[in-house]
Length: 119
Image (cartoon, rainbow, N blue to C red; front, side):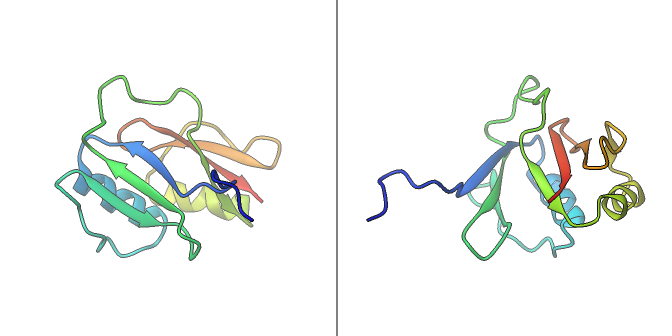
């Protein structure tokens, strides 16, 4: 029997200032078409995998102080060098160089700190 609270993350909420721009940016770096619906004018669910995990962009919860100072979550990669170059090519704001050959940090257009990590 599975517990009432499952040991699985279903969604990660990200506070964004402009839902349409955020949808375009996240879809761009994930190489997805920005066709996901904007719900109630402020939410956009972007699937991360086929297991029901999503990033939920939400412009209703955004404030100027909602930026994380440490990474909110990380995206996995098999090739950290290629991922770093990919982010550079996309003109993503890169906060750190590749550290310990394993990870680097970036910011989304709203200043949310994210990480890319070799899995």
